[in-house]
Length: 553
Image (cartoon, rainbow, N blue to C red; front, side, top):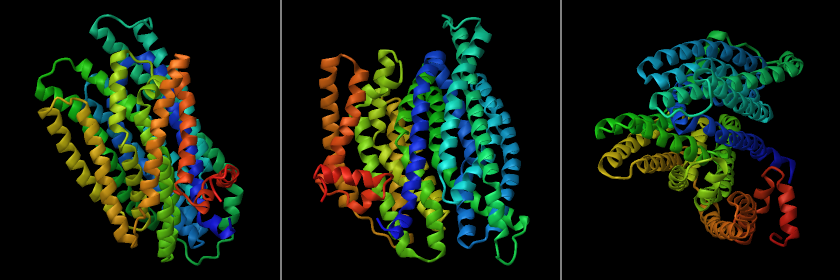
């Protein structure tokens, strides 16, 4: 592949690095959820997820969008070779997030007074994490703006490792301290106290993870400080932006990102309120322990597993944003359209088979990651199957949202998310109150929300960039290959299960075999060209392998 083509497709490689870290982080998150679930139980997980939903909203409003927003601004400054101004943006952003973080942490403590006491205790344990996360986000955005995702990738893995270790450890310590034993009490009051103590410990793990990641990023900045200062001294740009103008620019850029991301992720909190507050209130259900336990299965298991493939889409969205911002600033719309087309195709080639695989292997995957009683396993399996299609919808919605932001259409994702949120909330309430779908109503509403976001954002991108989406090799061929793969995965798992009588061994073998089948079918159906395969991380090795197997000329 030529140097020019490598430069054009470099964002795919950076996205691959970030995606790898994101997937590893999510796998670590899933692996520790099993032991954590064994410690705090469905009830503790339900309290944790309820508090986490509110924590997520405050995080979205205060600092979650900081890396993307800062990376866009810094990339624009670097594109104009304004190295001094780029660094002033970095320093101004630190001041901004410190102020916002303090306010947001206080808001989280105040919010705890309106929640149930159990969830409120967990929510307050998240308060320090809000402040630290904003500062971490600025450092991540600074390196991403320079086109490097390695620092962010390593910090994500370190964050999740620390989170896992401290969550389990703190949960055990707090339960032992409160109960004097790790045994689950028979009475309901004792169960609630035990679950609350464990959930608080898990929340402390999130803060520990962010702190470890922040220390790593500060170390990376210190390591590169001489190079940064040397580049600033070489800046010959006339004029330096004042910090007042920089802060004003940060607010103007960050606010649309915050609103878009907050509304985009608000569906989880809305669904939580609808199911755990509105539904039992209207139906006059007294067993709230069962409600929170079921919500823990949905949010802590099915939704968490369905979110693993989204790591690639999120990474691709983060990687494409700075490069699109630079292309749009240079009025290179041909380059913009080419980059969008490649990003969409790569994401669909990877995420369509992920969705099919989750549907086909829902039960063994759930059993591999969590230790459930039969009833909880059945519920988690069916919910995961119901959510599998949302994987594709969320991927496209997330990618196109970043494309719109990179093109300067920062308000459009906000409008689209708002429309989708209203529709999904109405549907969720109607299905819960008028049908017997119970928790499956939330899964249907979640998928509808992702689908609406996907369609609305795709239409907006086509209009903004004059872009026309290729259908056959982007959607049709990967879907056919994925369905065939799904059949092989299911048949292979069932056959291996008969031979080994071990669900875990069977699913661990079935997944890579099915992935190889999908790759071969994709090549046989001519769903991907050589230059597109080479654009992937280590793509030249895949091309060499395909040619040796005579799957590619």
